Image (cartoon, rainbow, N blue to C red):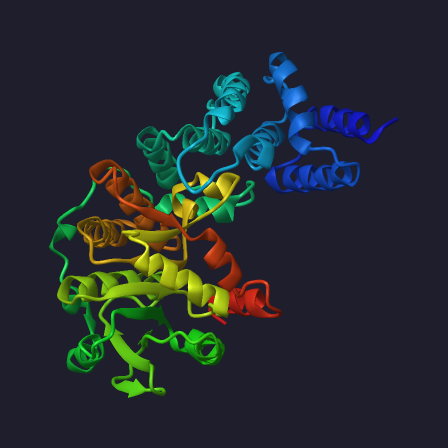
Length: 419
């Protein structure tokens, strides 16, 4: 018997087992996926075949395994390059046929899964993914609000990724920035920063983090920036209980930042965009925004010069394909961005501030908040400034991303866990 048939038979048998939960269902699907991959087969093809023909059995099948299979089918199908390739913009037309097929199959299981929790919540997540793929963020935000209010099941698939719903809102845009005053929640040496800003340079690099990340990654950032001849200054904003503004060399500065807000990773990730708005609004500078673990080379240096001199209003890092290219909290990621002095750029940052303020106050779990705010601002300028030049910096960010270096991801997980 070939692998595909074997997987289909085992899945059909297990669907009749009433005793397994989400964890067992997830582990089973993962093992099947690995088996199929060895023969260059796709799990979504197997799941689509069974789910598209077996809905008449849905009432007697195990709901945990049905809902797990459904979300895995949608996730895997939308993650295939042949189905969901993007070029940093909106959904491409060739995807729509595939999305419609997924929506039809998912709809056949709505009644049986929505009869009870937690299966209804997983079904909602399935529909949110489909709505993202269709570009329907208004309706998807309503579905995400349902998931947020109920709480996504502990052992259900893709739970970590779906925590992004906790800070995703699509109710409005915030061109006035919601009257947010940075200095009400953060304090730093404004005079020392003004000296750097007004030193005659055209651009400024901005990084924000906590002390652990600064101690771990700042040396490589500085060393590679110097070797790549990055010739405008960098300010590391480090959120801490310390005070001061220190020189780390001719072009590198450390600004300690105190905050009245809870010190958590979402705050460290967000502050660089909040302070970018503060700087762009009060100066003539263009700003580049980086992750602290970014590493440079001469190609990146040239890319930066091309971006700043090429007329781009903003540069953003868009995911290239798959679920992460359509979900609001991952479509625009944060390792590298650029903001000019244009009206579109200033409006982007103003909306970021307004969205962030709303989401910070409403959310109890704030991881992903910075990228949800970036997504909101991208949507805002796409509608309000349709001729704005938005540079897709995916290739730049991909070269500078340090996650593939040994130990980096392990360190990030350790810090995130609070260790």
